[in-house]
Amino acid sequence: MRKILVTGGLGQIGSELISHMANLYGKDNIVATDVSDANVAAIGDIQFEKLDVTDGESFRRLVEKHKVNTIVHLAAILSARGETMPQTTWGINMGGLYNALEVARVTDASVFVPSSIAVFGKNFPLDNTPQDTVLQPTTMYGVTKVAGETLCNYYFDKYGVDTRGVRYPGIISYKTLPGAGTTDYAVHVYYEAVKNGHYDSYIDQGTYMDMVYMPDALRAVTELMEANPEKLVHRNAFNIASMSLEPSMFEKSIQKVMPEFTLGYDVDPVRQAIAESWPNSLDDSCAREEWGWKPEYDLDAMTVDMIENLQKKLK
Ligand code: NAD
Ligand code: SER
Image (tube, rainbow, N blue to C red; front, side, top):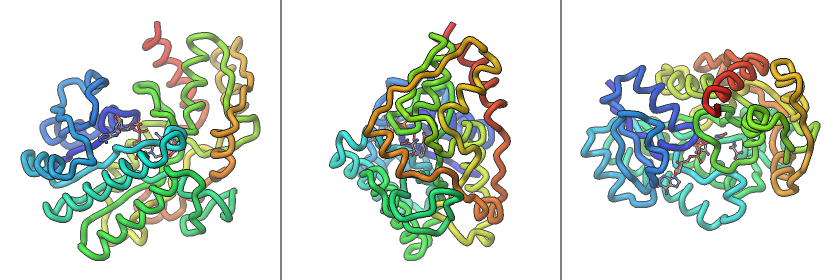
């Protein structure tokens, strides 16, 4: 049975992944950690420990104390925030990952680490971006994700640490707000639709990026973690795709549920430049072939679910 420690577990993904894994593996087999306990209410009665991932000694002690055999390493600074503090982003993203891999090496644990569409940047095919192509990111976040994928593959090749990961597109969810990435507009548009009936998008009309709804994003983690290792040609990290979207597509989809909703534009040049350096759409055929990735939500199904849940949450 898996005993799983999650780092950065109170963020957008962790706060939902922890309940998803508690349902699959039992709540006593999950240990949530984060540098801050501000959002601890989000994980209910799952055990929680404070952990700064840059502190390797405390990291190892917690893994040994709870007899952990699987580390899900989520702690990171995302793209837009990362550009305001590149040096700190390198320190947390790379220092934390190095500690996760070293702890896994000495305790014989396996490691799941999400990568990102931010690994792409220049000189790659924007449409149907292949699994194996040029990785020349333009953000510090992307630099840490390329270096991180490489380091995870190194620990597998050199030490046999079972490392696996997906390149997440933008993740859309209603439970915990995203942590200052470039794709956050795709979450904010739903919050503002429900709160005010209007949203000004900082990403311009016609700028496509891949997005995935949280329930599919959660399944990707546990399905890849449980995949037959003999079938994995790739490990770190798989392109996964679900929906290639641009802002006016959200407008039309939301208007099917809330006809009075309006969308405007107030483009932020920094996040717009990052968005334009990322794929319009990903080729996820390797994930489909090697471990059976298959998203379930399309835009309209996600819109109905987001609005229904946000209307309950924000009333
Ligand atoms: P988030 O910003 O919502 O959460 C990150 C968490 O890490 C926060 O709770 C924060 O408190 C914690 N953290 C920050 N510094 C820490 C430290 N030094 N020690 C311990 N914890 C620390 O991010 P998220 O969206 O949940 O992302 C989780 C992972 O998924 C990240 O690796 C991110 O790059 C990746 N990812 C996310 C998306 C997305 O759209 N959300 C897309 C691609 C990849
Ligand atoms: N959603 C993330 C970001 O925008 C992608 O890694 O930073």
